[in-house]
Amino acid sequence: MLLIRALRGLLFLSLVGITLFLAYAVTRGRPEDLPWTAFDLSRPIGLSTGGKVASLADRLPACAAQLDRAGVAYRALPPLDGGPSCGYADGIALASASRRAGARRIVLNPAAPPMSCAVAAGLAMWEWHVVQPAALRHFGEQVTGIDHYGAYSCRRTYGAAAGRWSEHATADAFDVAGFRLADGRRVSVQDDWRGTAVRAAFLREVRDGACRLFSTVLSPDYNEAHSDHIHVDVAARGRLGGGYCR
Ligand SMILES: [Zn+2]
Image (cartoon, rainbow, N blue to C red):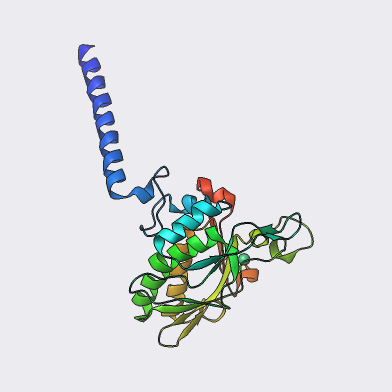
């Protein structure tokens, strides 16, 4: 009886010790894994980064402060009232997705599309931590441009006449069509998703990396409607880790 009590006590103390040690180690080493730590765009992507990006939605001052701190060049846009289901109050236009020392300036084509600040924060992290490293590994080149189909669009999902409103209706989504490399090569979602091995691998890698940042990521793997772009958004369910990645 005494032995069992002693063993139980020992087990309890070890569990407390292990928990405290893990909490200490994780907090000191990888704050991006913990939901309660401060968000920082320049930190690597961690387990809780996607939730933090989604939680920036509709919080312009907090989001703009993050862009400022990370050195992202942007212009705040006046609020847009698009009716009962459309518009935004947290719109910005990215001057370029990056203004980091030593980093190339990424150009969005078309330039400066209106998007919510939270989407811009996710795109900046995606570029630094996912897209550029993947481009260097697969092509030995940096990405200098991202072709896209825009962010804001007052429409329901799939452009249907009825049903749920799209995250695009509040500028909380962005459709990526392709990438331009520094040497002039282009990688397009439509042509290269099932293209050469290296191009297809690059596109899947940037899709998978986006899934760690955005609430929803829909690629050509999802359906025919996404055969020519990768959709990313900061839908609210992403705050609790309810992401969707296809
Ligand atoms: Zn979309």
